[in-house]
Length: 233
Image (tube, rainbow, N blue to C red; front, side):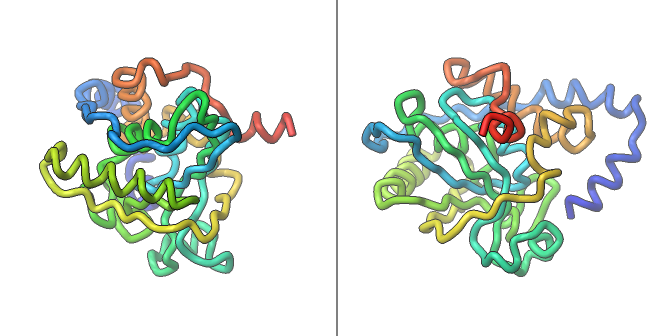
């Protein structure tokens, strides 16, 4: 679905792009309460894996989030043999386009990451789709790396549903992470490298703008890029 959308959007003119700016500015940020249950502070770098539609935008949001050490686009939910973009795009692999987030719990908690995820990174009420993209590979999912993460995620979903924060129930699935497979290199840092690409400009730049607007204390202007992490290793 995204590939056909990209082909259509890529054919738009500069005039069309100019008119896209007011549409982005009109995007509403979703104000939601912080989780009442959060993970205990830890002294080491932690890992969170989340899925919420196209990984370009989700990665971009968390690359602009303070306390995130690295955010990598990839695949979770299926096997290593099918963890490639063309195969995952079939929607028959069990994989979801996901983002692996390494974060410093002294600077940002797991609960805060989930708050940003539910608030600005995606719409958790859309089943097996996100915006123009449809299929199980675009589903909303949290892949937990510990029992504590599972407890926090499930409690937060119950909290948000109970408060009727969204007009429809949250469809996000919570399950244990079996493995995460990084996506191909051309998918990494995509939002930063292609900010004027029509799909990014229309669907994903507003997410970063809403992060800055709604989570000013957690926003950083300079993104934490995969390419920079590789260069320092």
